[in-house]
Amino acid sequence: MLEVDVIIIGAGASGLMCAIEAGKRQRRVLVLEATNKPGKKILMSGGGRCNFTNYTVEAENFISENAHFCKSALSRFTQWDFLEMIHAQNIPYHEREHGQLFCNESARDILNMLLSECDKVGVDIQLKADIQSIKKHAESGFMVKTKAQEIHTQSLVIATGGLSIPKMGATPFAYKIAEQFDIKVQPTRAGLVPFTLHVEDKEKFAVLSGLALVATISNACQSFTENLLFTHRGLSGPVALQMSSYWQEGGELVINLLPGLDLQQQLLQAQQEKIKLKLKNYLAHRLAKRLVSTFLQEDMLELSVLDLSHKQIQQIAQQFNHWTIKPNGTEGYRTAEVTLGGVDCHAISSKTLEANQVPALYFVGEALDITGWLGGYNFQWAWASGWCAGQVV
Image (tube, rainbow, N blue to C red; front, side, top):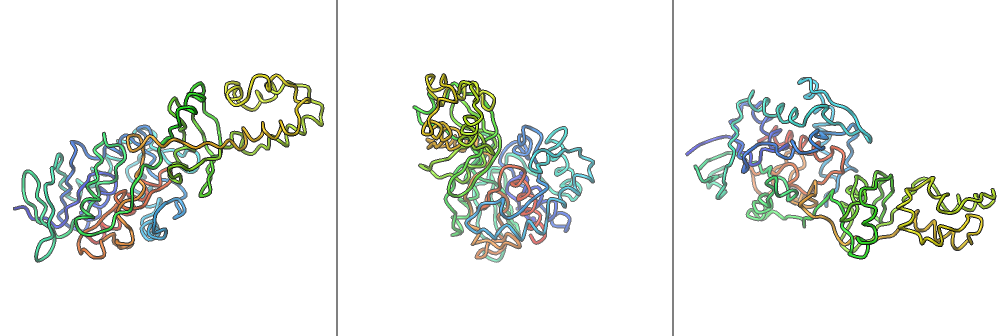
């Protein structure tokens, strides 16, 4: 039987960070990974460039039933601490909009850095590890049984993430372990995911597939302004992904296709200035022609701006400034970047990430009910939670 100090299940962002920190403390660390490669999600993230953190990280950028939970970890291992690691390895990176930081070359730079740090401190990583059972040991620690062996460990860290992108190996493993030890799991659903539309809407807007524009999407909970992309299935782009985390089944979205422009006021002003353009030509300066013709009837578009009644102006403005739509759903875990919900943070120490009622059992990263916005926040949560657990396991 193998004896180690720490077993970390999951060789993703949070698991590898935890392994590095525990290894620095001379702990004998074994990382067990179910798939054939470590860090698969790191490699595919950010279009292969890995949006590894953000210049601005606040608790407000995260969603959880326990809103204050993330504050401790995020304040103890910050974006600047992760950037120190990046600088030490001379990894070239750049900033995109909203403070998002990406590798210049490849996400592999991040993974290689983490694996090399693991190597330095003697972390052992086993791939294709098929875990068959986990039992709390009578005296202390845990007995982890794989197909190949039985391993006794003093501390056990669950870093297996959520349900998003099953083709990358996502499973409900973390939730099953939580339930095994009577730890509550908050209901889960796909987050940072495109919307799908009802059949009639899908048919109506199919002609707009591939069209992108800056838009504001709002509901009673939240509002974001970023790029919106029409797809053959529905609505995508950063603004749709952000809003998906704040949308519940059956809810409506209000979309402003002309953010920062009051179309009603503009049209009334155009009438005062005696602008003789046809409506379709007036709108063509502001919106794509195919968008305009999808939203408005041809006979309306042929009218002169001067001939529009106040009621017509109101209706036109409503279409573009307050387009209300009820999505059919989302594309689900298949394409979701994150999982909302997860292991209940009320049952976990915000300082150590240890389960309150189960000594030496830890949960880090996306397995927990902490979901960040699009923009590097989920990686920063992975680094911070992994780092904090690594100080104590």
